[in-house]
Amino acid sequence: MNRCMRLSLLAGVILFLRFITLAQEGPKPAFVSSPRRIMTAPELKDAPDDWVDRSLQWVNYILENYRPALIEHPVRRAALIRLDDILHIESAPTKEIVQKFYRERLERAVGAIEQTKVTEGMRIWKLYNMGFVVRTPTASFAFDIVPGMPGSSVPGFLVPDNVLRRLVAQSDAMFISHMHYDHANRDVARMFLERNKPVIAPEGLWSDVPDLASRLTYPERSTEIIHSVSIRNGTQVLKVIAYPGHQGNAPLNNVHLVITPDGFTVVQTGDQSGFEGPGGDFDWIAQIGRDHQVDVLLPNCWGNVLGRTIRGVNPELVITGHENEMSHTVDHREDYTQTYNHLFELRYPAIVMTWGESYHYLKDPVRKEAQTGVVHN
Image 1 (cartoon, one colour):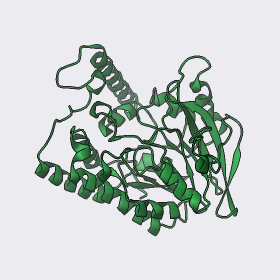
Image 2: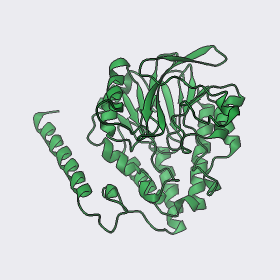
Image 3: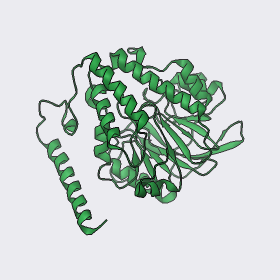
């Protein structure tokens, strides 16, 4: 990149950040629900079912034909932004068309997981919220798996138990970051434990539920202690660090670093968003990349100072999570548009995916792909 191009890029970033600052400092326009959403299209009160249905069909078509890649085709972003528009209709969680879209995407993802054997690299599926499944040639493990929108008020926004059991059958272990219902589900945890598969959780989770508390694995929260978690009937071992994170002042939020038997390292942050001052969480976040060569970081898209977290972990690849949690009020359903805005000024390879999509990460070619446009799917 020549000097003129660098100066142009720098000027663009400065103008972009200044626009965000002015938007947040100024009065809230009537067309948005909160100042933080000034950079995204306003939420809709409602929309015709025909428009929603045709839009979702188009989104599915585009996502099927333009898969996640570091060199992203512009039409993918258009499809995700159209999905934002739909999921930010206030009535979206109760619309049967939207519920069906969610369930079908998750069921197709489980079918793909069942059919996928990884012989090199990592295949990472993004499910719901911060739910991910990671598969390498030697291990297959999950983070923060929940059926869907927590609570029984919208049962149509839940993946059926039989589909969840199929997913559990394909996973060797599950990690739970913290206690909130959009990250921790008792029924899913029991499905893992019934198959004698470890569930690794923050200390105290479900301490009042004896059949769970007695069987969960509570690793000591530390920046240095490496725990061993046996999988596949003891034939393989995951190495795990449970970093002592937080969501605000509470609850405890484990930031799990997982090293697979074949040497891949993944970090999932849960809802890490606490303690920015001296002695706070960023003191140890800043050391993760120094102490470990992280392949993939799975951060929550809305975490405070996302760029600082990414720089501290210094991963080869970033795949964001937590967009469009449908149990949140519509003004707090973090959208893909905002994720793109957060990632704009960062110089790290990043992938933005929606429910049910996956990406095949290869340890060596990932940087080359970013430079040359050679896509590995």
